[in-house]
Image (cartoon, rainbow, N blue to C red):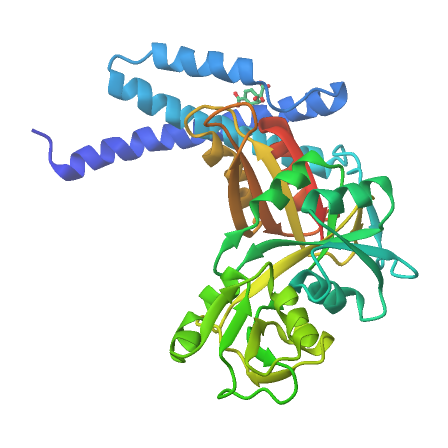
Length: 376
Ligand SMILES: C=C(O[C@@H]1C=C(C(=O)O)C=C[C@H]1O)C(=O)O
C-alpha cells in the first residue's frame, strides 16, 4: 500500500490540474461576460445551469459522487456569475438604479403621519426625527399611514419596525412590500417607562396604577413590589396619562413614557421602572418617492427564494462576495403560498457604490421579486 506521503503527492498533482483548469474556465467565463455585455444578455441562465448539473452528475459512478460534483459545480458556476457581474460593473453596463440621490431630505413645510394617539411613542419618535414644530396628524392603523403617503396627504410616515426585546413589527414589513413607498430614514427611541401622576400624588397616596398591558408587564417587578397598588389595564400608555390629567385623583398613577407625562402635565414619581433597562424601538421614515440620501449607509431589500435546497445560501453569497456587511435578516410567509418565504435583509452600503450595484444586480437576476425598500 502507498504511504500517506505518496498519496498526498498524487493529490497535489490532481489539484494542480484542477486549479489550472479552473483558471482556464474562468477566462472563458470572462469572454462570455464580454459577449453578454455586447448582446445585452442576462448573466444567469438557470436552464443551462440545470443541464450542466445533470450532465456532470450523470458522469459519476456513485450517488455520493453525484451529490458532491453537483455541489462543486454549483459553486463553480456561482463564481463564474460573480466574475461576470464584476465585468458588467467595470464596463458600466449595470445601468442606473431607479432611485434619485438627494443631498438632504425635503423638510420644509412637510406633513407627517403616525399611527396612534397624542403622546404615543410613535409621536415621540416623529418629534425626535422631525423636531417639535412639525406639522402632523395621526391615524388609527399602520395601513392608514401607508395610504396617507401613497395618496400624498402626508409627505412622510413614521412607523415602528423593530423593538429590541419584542422583535419585528411584522405588519409593517408586509406593508412595505404591498405599497410603493420607500424608507428614507430611521430613528431609535429608547422606551423608558415612568410612573406619573397629577401634582400632589406621592408613592404612598397611590391605590391604582393604569397602563397598557405591555406597560404593566414590562414594569411588573417594580409594581409588584408595591403590594397595595391595584394594576388596571387601559387602551394605551398615553391614554393612561391623559386619564390622570382628566381625573385629577392622587390615589391613581399611570405607567407611561416621559413624553406623555410631560404632554399631560404630570409629575414623574419614579423614572425608568422597566424591568429591562435597555428597551428601545427602531422607527422608519417612509415616503412615496424613490429617493435616497447621498450619504446613506444602510440598505433594506426583500426578495423571495425559489423553493430549492441551497437557494438562500447562494443568494446570501452576493453579500459576502461583494464584501457587504449584513446587519439583519427577517423572514415572512409569502401570501397565498404556504411554507414559502420572503426574506428581508438590511446591509451596510450606498446605492451609488459599485459593490452594492453588483450585489443587487446578482440578486435581481437570481432571486424572485427583489424589491429595494430604501437606502438611508
Ligand atoms: C457561463 C455562463 O454564465 C452563467 C454561468 C454558467 C457556467 O459557469 O457554466 C452557466 C450559465 C450561466 O448562468 C453561460 O451563460 O454559459
